[in-house]
Image 1 (tube, rainbow, N blue to C red):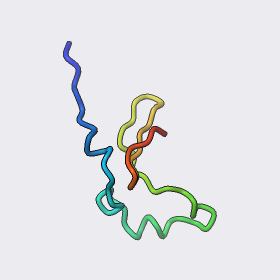
Image 2 (cartoon, helix red, strand yellow):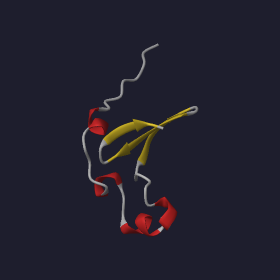
Image 3 (cartoon, one colour):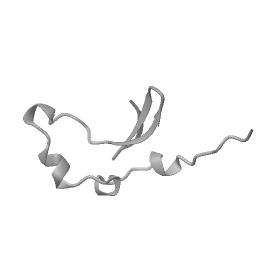
Image 4 (cartoon, rainbow, N blue to C red):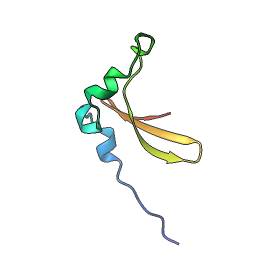
Length: 61
């Protein structure tokens, strides 16, 4: 059986928050105690493994 191949090259490049779907709405939801968190978009989910994409690139969560 053939496995599907996924091109993650776009996920490893730097992106703007807007290109990740971030809007002011999401920033308004953050409280003062969450100021040090890095905004990310969940890119992949496989069982108990998550991958996020931020402005600086891809990260295993």
